[in-house]
Length: 413
Ligand code: GLY
Image (cartoon, rainbow, N blue to C red; front, side):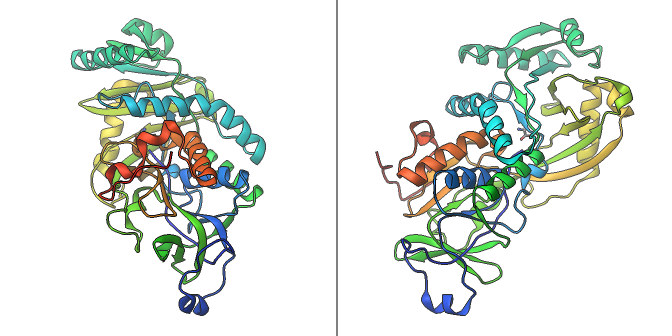
C-alpha cells in the first residue's frame, strides 16, 4: 500500500507572490518557504528531504507527518511480481526506483541514524491450484517478454525453499530481485532526515490552496495560518484530490482504495518461518506474507473500493487469514498482534502523477496506488530535480499529471 496524509503551511518568501494581505494580517505569520509540500507521508517526506538537500527552503504541512498509508503498507518492493498487462511503462519506472533502493537506503540511514529494515530477500509467488498455475504461467510469459528475471519452480522446489508452504502448492515463480523494506521505519528515518536537513514542519492540515494571480502561492492551514511558498507540491496521498482552491481541471483524479492488513509475530522459539516474501493469487485476490527480520510477519491485503472507509472488518480479516492459511497453514499458530486498514491513492491508470500541473507553481506527487513505497526513491529524485531546475526528468515524463488535465499544455523541454 502507499503513503501520505494531508496538510499545509503559510507566509510569503521574498521571491514569492504575496497571498491576500487582508487575510494574512489576521493570522499568525509563518516563515515563508521556497517549497511547501502538502502531505507528510512517505512521498511528501522524500520529496521534502530531497528538495532541502538541493538547497530549497522547504516546509511540510501535515497534522501527523510520517503517518498515512505507510503506517499500514507491507513494504514489498515488487516491480516484477506485481507486473500487470498494459503497465509496461509503469514497470520501467518501478524498476528504476527498485534499482535505487540500496543506495537510497544507505544514504538515508546515514543521514538519519535510523535503520529502515530494507531486506534484499527476494519473493516467491506460488500457485495453489490449476487455475492459479495458469495465471502464474501467463505472468511468467509476460515477465519473460519484458526481459525480467523470474524462474519457474515445481511445487517441490518451492517447498524446498520455503518448508512452511502448504503441501498442495503446484508450482511457483522465484523472483530474486523483488525485495522489501519496513515503511514505518522508513517514515521515521525520512522524518529525522528532513528535520536534520532543515525542513520546517507545520503540524496542521492544509485546507485551501492559496493563489496569487494565476499561480499557486501557498496554502491555508486548518488552524488559520497561511504559508506562502514559491512552489507547492500536492503529496497528500488519497486525499490529494480534495484540497479546496485547486481549479477543478487541475485536481488530481486520485481515489481511496482500501487495504486491510494484519500483523502477526513469529516467536523467537520458532526459528525461521519464511525466509522471503511469499505471495499467491487465491480466488482471484492477491495475498502476501512479508517476513521481517524483527519477527514481524505482515499479511496483506484486501483491495476495496469503499470511499473513505477504514474500518477493519471481520470479513476482511477472515478472508486474509483463510487465504494465507491455504498458503502457509502454520500461520494459525502465530500471535495476531495488529489489524489495520489504509487507503492507497488510486489513479485512473494505476500510475503516479509526478510533476507540474497546468496551474503554474503547483506540482503533484501522488496517485502511486500499489507502488508508493517502491517509488519513493525515484519520486524524491525527480520531484527535487523538477523543483530546482524546472525540468521534469525524462523517465517521469509519461507520468505527468497533465495526462489527465483538460488544460493540456506542453511540458517545458
Ligand atoms: N503493493 C501491495 C498492495 O498495495 O497491497
